Amino acid sequence: MLAHARTKPGADAIRWRQADAAHLPFGDESFDAITEGYLLRNVEDLEVVLRAAKAR
Image 1 (cartoon, one colour):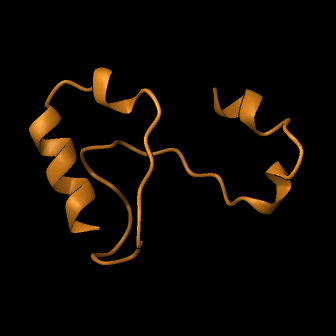
Image 2 (cartoon, helix red, strand yellow):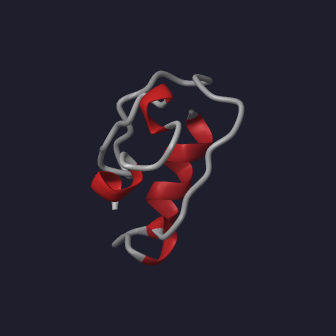
């Protein structure tokens, strides 16, 4: 999906990252918002993933 997204107009203005949703490589309070497409239905431990996103 990331490879396809990178072909879209304006995609070169985005800094793309791929990471384990349960162990995000960003410091706490790094973002104002997080969007997720198919993430929530594709993780093993939903609670851990949501906790990791909340901390960011």
